[in-house]
Image (cartoon, rainbow over all chains, first blue to last red):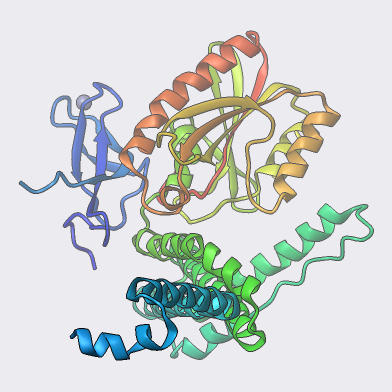
Amino acid sequence: MMSSVPATDRKSKLLVYSIEECPVCGQKTKRAFAVGDYVTKEAAKCTKCGNQTRVSLVYAESTKPSG
Amino acid sequence: MSLISSIGLQGLTGLSSGDTVTIIYIIFFMGLFVFQFAFGTRIQVYFALNDIGRGLSKLKVMKEKSRKEAIDYLVNVGKAANDPSQRVDQFLDYVTIMPVGIDPQGLVNKIDHVVTTNNDRVRAEVGALVTQNNPVTVSISENLLEVATALNMIHKVVRHYYILGKKTNSYFTLIQLQMLMPMIIQESDALLNAVDSFKVGQPVGDGIGPVSVSKFMVGKEKRAIAKDTVMAISEYKGRKLYIVKADGPMAYVGQPGVAIKKIVEEMGVKPSAIVMIDAALKLEGEKTGEIAEGVGAAIGGIGVEKFQIEEVATTHKVPLYAILVKQSILEAITVMRKEIAEASERVVQTLQRVIEEKTKEGDDVVVAGIGNTLGVAQ
Ligand SMILES: [Zn+2]
């Protein structure tokens, strides 16, 4: 249930990501969506300036065609 | 060879073998014509029945899957005390009777009353069913049950016309249903896909309005202004912004109509503009995540909220502006696509431009992010 593996959409093979954004320096980190994530949730400390980051977006992206 | 032909057809009728072939051809095509005339529709009915039958079994599978997903969620996440199957089945057949429309005066209030009663009932029942009473779980359960109810209804109606068409051998009923079937399946598929995003609490495409306005609300004091709806006061270039959205990260749509009415009529705010941000259904061929601007109340649903907002705006002569993000029905109810999420930045820029263009410093502006706010807090 609480897996941090990107949740996949059955048909179009979508991977869901959470974007953590630092309000001070603007650094964005993209990671796999974890159950319990929501937009504006407080996330990890910024790796650049140490400020509190927040989840700014949660979105799905289709996987690149396998080749 | 020549002996056979000389005592055969040619000998008896005086026709050449070429004439015989022509006659057979004519008889064959005349027969085909009569056959087509007499049995053509029956054959088409047969194919239509086959086609609809296949679609109907697909719908049945979808309906059962959504029911099972709802039950599983209630048991596994909601920690329902007893087996909820029976309760869920009763739930799926629950009806909401819309008020009569022959005397339209005050109809919106009546619809609002019936719908509110139903929503309260759903929440109370789900609340009683699950022991894990956190609002996110309850709201997700409500949405999952709604999906299951919708699929149950679609299946029932399609089955009704299928059986009716079969019984009465009605060509036109069946052909119409056959024509609609691909669209019905597509929409049902979208509903079923929505279950996957709902049960893990991921924001859906319809949540683009809430996502866009949440950026203005972070860190501000929030207050409940209507059922499931919150408001925060923010500031942009000398304008005071009253930001409204449904209370996240629950799967709520809230009551933006009531909220805007309260801001204007009870709090005594005199806004110079109301800006609404919502997802809009794109036409085939339009790009997902495209932004459109307009005037008017940008809000879907049964029409109650739209009516309330239009009334407040008209009574107080407040211009209504709309910012819309295009998406398909599937994209609107399943996990938010990158193109839509990334449009939020452009939405904010558009919003800022609209505020700068349409209002002056010192003005009050109401901004409403419309849509399901699952996975989007503030
Ligand atoms: Zn930083």
